[in-house]
Length: 307
Image 1 (cartoon, rainbow, N blue to C red):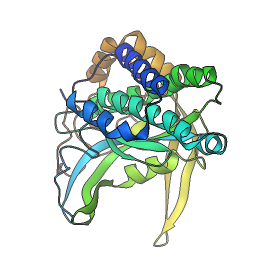
Image 2: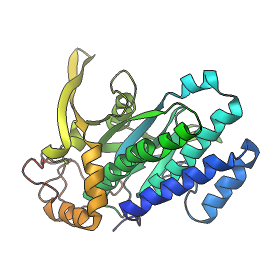
Image 3: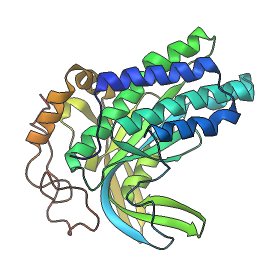
Image 4: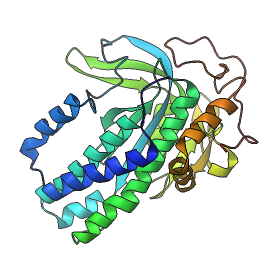
């Protein structure tokens, strides 16, 4: 079993408490450092980047599997025209605090803040592929639900327009690498999963209130939670064309099911994942560095619902 996670109901309540407490206090920017220190002290956040690879030096890298996700906040630019900087900060800081907690408590790690959003990843050496997948899908679903049911009513009560979010997710092998020189560097997961997930979170590919996933992650998801959409590409590289199948993930239904009976959902996911996985690795294999070369293809879950 990998990183400890809490129940969906508790995660939802924690998000509400965190956002409302931060938003209503109108915490000034000078206290941000103290806030992060407080979160770190209680184990909510340590540093940006995956803890198992954070000590890599520039030029070093390790290969592992992960679910990579980008959550993009829509509507912030519009608010910036109408609000003073400190008011805009109050919204961004409150949402960021609550999102950090939700991702951490959901079993994920914060990769970086991307201007109007956040990059996160799920999976470590103590986590199986199915555990990482379930954690990512549930966490993102609850983030959507929380923004819709907690953040926006709070903004409305303060006379502010609602915000919207969108997300992109993909699973795959990534090359954990430290990019840069000496102290001026950043940990990055390099691979198709990372770059595709980032693209899918943008307005060019995904509408507000949508979560779009790549085909490798979609192969884990039963048909009841996904709908196939227009593919990504084709893109031409060295006179060869590449495409990727894309799917819309039904986060609303998944969030309802996760909140209804999370222990049963987890049990069924682990029980029903069997045979070769997405990268030809048997179910239950943990996300270790330098995995063996892939053998065979993915195993879809077309006829295996969660319940």
